[in-house]
Amino acid sequence: MTGDLQNSAAGVDYEVRRLVQQYWARVDRQPGAEKDFADFFSEDAVMRLAALTLSGREQIVDFLRKRETANEAQKRVTRHVVSNYRMSLTGDRTARLHATLQVYAGAGTLPLPSEAPSGVGDFEFHCARTPDGTWRIVKIEGDSIFAGDAAPAFAKGKNEASAMRDAFCACVPHAPMLKLQARHHNEDFWAEYDRLVSEFQKYEPELVIVFGGDHVNTMHLSLMPSFVIGQSAEAIEDWGGAPGALDVPADLAIDLADNLVEKEFDIATSYAMKVDHGFSAVLEAFLVGRLDSIPVIPVFINSHYRPRPSLKRCRELGEAIGSWASSLGKRVAFLGSGGLSHDVSMIFPQYEDAPNEDVRDIMVHGHEKLGLNLQESLETVRQIMTGHAEDLLKGGESPVAANPDWDKKFLDAFAGDLRAFDAWTDELVLAGGGSGGGEVRMWIAAGAASLAAGSSPIEIDFFTPQSTLGFGLGLAHAGKKRA
Image (cartoon, rainbow, N blue to C red; front, side):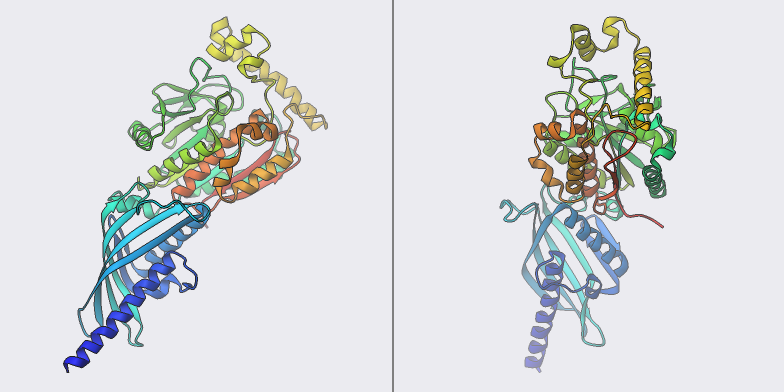
């Protein structure tokens, strides 16, 4: 009798351990672990991972599949190392397995750098045998003992709802030329743009984080930071955009800035941020004319004047912001404003290339330095660009010189592993995309943020090597489309 019981316990111990080992192998996508997630769990299973609780097989499997999709997009690799097994029978057909779990995680090309585990936890697996003899997981309970910087938010005890949110991202141009030509000249582009706006509205974001730049209208060389988080912001009245105050949630904006400083980003902040069409053109389109209809945090990225932040640093910034956003328990949308290839050095020269001291004074101090009226200057530029817009419709040459080959190269990389941009130097971007092509920094940051927040992979929605607008024309998004 005792021998039969021992043999039974040993058999259960083997089967339950095997089930748990197969589960973690499937989570880590190890070769040969092809079993579907649904096959591991009972229909009413519960999974609690520190602050995250999932109820029912459907919700658990949905979470695991979203995690897998995000890892694929980020080229993220994990290994869950399980040890210290202790099994106990809890009934005729039930058992409980205690174990210690160490998690290692990283992204990029193998082999990855060897570092301390991102987390260590104590786990209990409650398992039950089905009538056909198959063991399934009824409950997983995991408690974090150690949680490093790379650990997910729920492992650190933060808001569990964030793990069940889908992030959304859209990357679009902001060129004023878009308002100077009737839509029917670029119908396919506008149809796709309108679809992205519709998807954004269906997503019903509770917070928008927009990455944008400036065109020597509000930011000047008297002080030109690489990155600025707006704590309060207002859009000026410039052509191509829309004026008005943004609804910036001050508590979240400063928390974001604090979080970035903790992650060793030297972040500037502004409590009186002014933005031009580099922000407002996109916000006007997606917020349907009302810049204050949804809470917005503006993130300025310097893309025009040396020294510009590297594309790698912009990716890292985006990932850090996305990670922070994922802990909020809110539906967060990310907008990348700018690009693609266009050269505007004739309008925005570098300081040393300015034609005279008056232009340098405007670059450094703004129009007020020379007693000029900004609105009058903007109107002059608008009239010049209106003439260019009409010339382009007649088949004239673009004044900003797009480079379709470079645009295609960028978009191919953008729809893949964003770490590919780590090797793109500023000199190569300028040579291929022109001085305006540097605005792809906003796309990279927005895309990286969305992926880090849990969106589906980036998709290119539109690209054409030719248009009547004269600059590189593309659209991209990330995030599941809703019916």
